[in-house]
Amino acid sequence: MIGADVPYAASLLKAGKLVAIPTETVYGLAANALDEKAVQAIYLAKGRPQFNPLIIHTNSIERLQEWGLKVPEQAIKLANAFSPGPISFVIPTSNAIPEIVTAGHAFVAVRIPNHPVCLELLSMLPFPLAAPSANKSGCISPTTAQHVADQFGTQIPYILDGGACHIGLESSIVSFANTNPQLLRLGGLAKESIEKVLDCELSISHIQNNENPQSPGLLSRHYAPQTPLLLDLDLEVNQLGNMHQLGCIRFQHLHPDIPPENQYILSEMGSLDEAAQHLFMAMRLADSRNFKYLLAEIFPAHGLGLAINDRLKRASIQL
Ligand code: AMP
Ligand code: MG
Image (tube, rainbow, N blue to C red; front, side, top):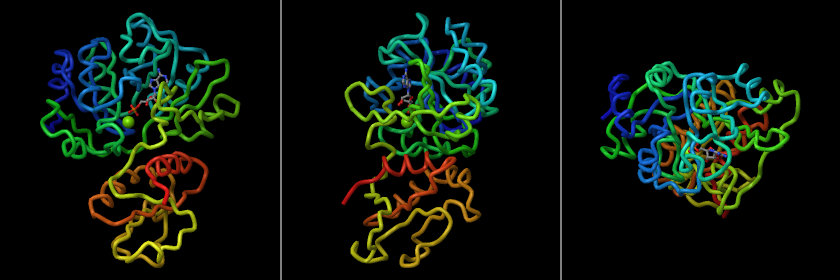
């Protein structure tokens, strides 16, 4: 059921149930992070591999000490600048956090989401919420309550509706597991903004092994539509068959050779933030049209363009 009843959502979560929650990045599939059984239900519902750890969410950085978590100084610096916001920190875990949340790692990912409904919910709970994106494993992340309902139907007891997500990409993840902070996932906060506050250049993790990845959101194929998606690598579109069977995801301008009604422009005014907000919605809409191929262009490689390109790359196939 979709609804806007925050106390009801809180009561379900307190009873160990799953609730889909709105955040500014994407919708999350949430459970009490301290309740192993409740967290297990997230993995089952998503079909998520058990080695893929979850991010825990609460309504302030200060509250993390309630669960024995100590936030490194540099992470505090970032939190002061950007939390609540689309950034997660990987920090040393504590005895209070069940191993199922961290997939057995000595580190846990934490985030303070910037969404009024979500913050209200979190403030009513005596525990943090473990919440991955509310989609089946490997599929496109949901940016509306309806997307969640389309995929899970009655499988989850309640979907808390907080409107369309205004960032539209998953959080950026910064790890403090090593001496130097590392960017594990490009996301809704631009790399440049994080680097400015840390006053250093961040290395991006390129780990893509499927066994015990440091950041499994970085699996090489992820966020994928059903329609084969080709990333614009100077392809000759007329070699791909009938133009009417091709769909397009583009930044600002129409592809000259493909019917305009088959094309999804992410930001007419050329804003990468707006493009990010529309990306997953466009991927879903384009996917529902049963095109033979989807063509996506490569976005400018700065700001959220880096994260957009990252998602498109993971969603794509090679001919
Ligand atoms: P999702 O919430 O589905 O976007 O996925 C959360 C992502 O956060 C995972 O796929 C990992 O990439 C990352 N993550 C969560 N916990 C940890 C952790 N303890 N160490 C490293 N990465 C983590
Ligand atoms: Mg996800």
